[in-house]
Image 1 (cartoon, rainbow, N blue to C red):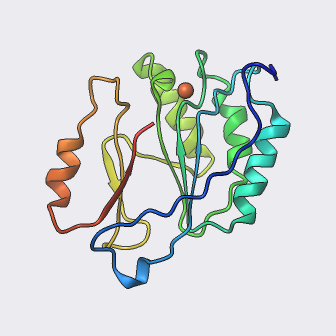
Image 2: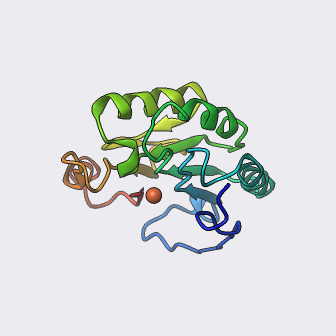
Image 3: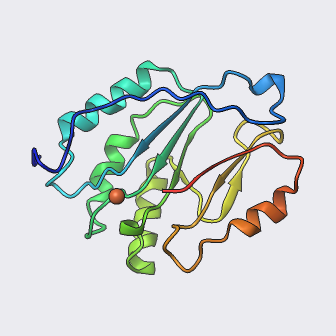
Length: 168
Ligand SMILES: [Fe+2]
């Protein structure tokens, strides 16, 4: 791990009010982990294991992973995914990709496959309903890709659906 490229592990607790959220979904605990940049230079296995342990200790309902998973080379995703497979989440682990995960379609597909093999669902302009039809989880294409299309999700969901989305 390069000391200048990785800061200490930090935990930020945020309460997000969602208009129209049903009482069944009040108080859900979501964990977001972001920007792993797993390339052998930045994040160390030790720090990653600590982050995963901290996430598991919070007994989250949902875990959301936001890219970048790698920096340049996609192949480290397989090693990273083996670590991420130890994440515990009541309703599943979901991911969106960052710009470093999408230098080419081949790279993107490698990242997606690696994550899926770890039981992680990758959303690319897709909507999932892990908690049932009353709460949508929207994962958009990377903001800098040519495929970033929030209008599609908005059209599918319509105005009455409470939605929680993430962009890396
Ligand atoms: Fe990044």
